[in-house]
Length: 145
Image (cartoon, rainbow, N blue to C red; front, side, top):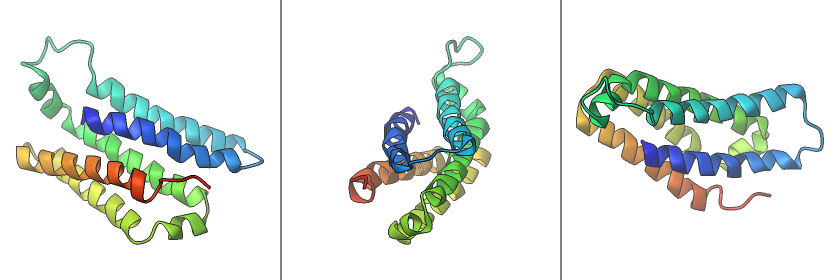
């Protein structure tokens, strides 16, 4: 999950660069972008605790916080959908069926990870989310126009 967070933070700045083309920003757009950043910051604060004294180790901490971790991933995906639509219907449509399919898959895997302690479920969620976000950076979001 830490690798996902790292890739997500990098890509988020890249995705948000598209808003630099907007000649006029509203306070609503500014607040939205700020709240989106807070979701990523909150994920980092949750994933990287200062202390683990009350837990047997990071694995125990992770599983005890999995609902919050994957809940924030659901919130991230909701913000991502709104963000993508805010950049225009043409932009949304240019992403093809892969984008809503991948967002939906991430949400399904996140819900499964919230309710499961099965390592295979968590591995599948992490591999898919990291893989999609990394691959999409080069195939879908390679350039900003």
